[in-house]
Image 1 (tube, rainbow, N blue to C red):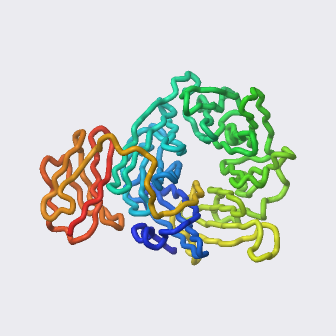
Image 2 (image 1 turned 90 degrees about the vertical axis):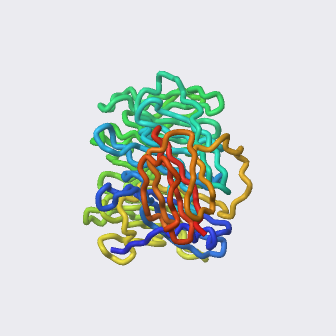
Image 3 (image 1 turned 60 degrees about the vertical axis):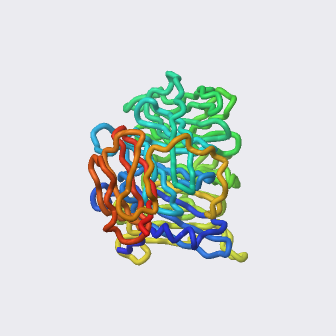
Amino acid sequence: MKRTYLLLLSLSAVWAQPLRGVLGLFEGNGTTYPNTGLFYYLSSANGSSEAFAGPIQDVEPFGNDLAYDPATQLLFVIGGSRGAFTPWRGSVYALDVWRSSVPLSTLDSIGARRLAVRDTLLLVTRNRAPYFTAYRIQYDSQTQALQLDSLWSPSSPLLRNVPDGLLVWGDTAYVALSYNASYSPDSLVLAINLRTRAVVGSWEVFPNPTELVRVGSSIYAACYGNFSQNLRIAKITPGSPTVTIWDAGRTSFGGFVTDTGGVKDTILFWDITDTLRAFAVGAQQTAPGAYAGVASSGGGLSGYGLLWTGAWLWTSFTNYTDTSLIILRDAAPSGGAPGPRIDTIFRPNGIPGGIGYPSLRRFVYFEGDTSRSVSALSAPRGQLFSVWPNPVTDWLSWSSVGAVERFTLWSAEGRKLREWLRPQAPLYVADLPAGTYFLRAHLADGRSTTVPIVRP
């Protein structure tokens, strides 16, 4: 089985130019793949491209979501959160992916479910109160000092159970939530104004709304019911109390996307047979055949991730041991045959090209330049943790705003090298070879932060 691992530190030199790309989140399984994983596809202005896949060290398995902040060039990732009877905590991790795969500051054990970024805000939905929280992102790229300060959570009584869908449109965050495990009709989509911090709209929809997309001037919610019913698609128009609900004609377990380029008014989803289906918003019905012929060929492969961005369609299948990734384009380059065609395919089960990591669940698309510019964000108001001297020769002194439970030291390649429990004195590092390392401080209150150190 093919294995491809992230070599992120070299990317700043190779990719210091305008880029477009896709970031994907592998769930991992907590055993043979003990960490959540990350997938990259990067394409530069000169036409070259590269792909990477591998684990994110020290990040919980069963990752739920990811969001990229173009202002700070930080990637935010949610670790696993599977309810009260599992050890996964639903922590939020921040990664400076262009420099290291070692996480920076962490919002630990908060039961996070979904993420979005809006300007200097990190928006997080959670599986326990407060169910929606906005954090201010403050980052100094030179020192890699990051703070995520909790600003506010809406106090509306409508927010009283797990929000499983999150979409930001302008200054409004739309949140989909079901009120209990029986998937009662009391399921809503809420609109939260990010400036006034108030709930400004609510719409009752079919039970179990989980994904939200925008097509034109409306929001569409994927409502799965009890998963034995057909998928319902609910149309919500801001400013109107009316909700229109259509039966998609197929049972679905997930995958619900539309063209992020806004060219097509079509919604794609996986049906229960792992066939890709297309729901036409204008015609208000699902096409009878598989979209672009995309369907599982069997062998235990299940449809999982979807991303549709302009002319590109990203689809993934998994057998929970490996992942098959199929990339399609709407038309061949240089005036080739029109219509969707397979551009790239990676297959699992030991066939060359298999990604070698399970369950590629979610994707995000980004455009930007990895060469950093001056951020518009204000400087941090005080750091959680600091070290000196840096560079360090023998002993590393430190200070913290709270009690430190433990330190972990990581190599530049993301390998955990050593650990100090309840440290009370300077750390001895004279035996380290020359190089750059990352020291992560785990505070007793659940927060953590990472600082780079240099051993000359």
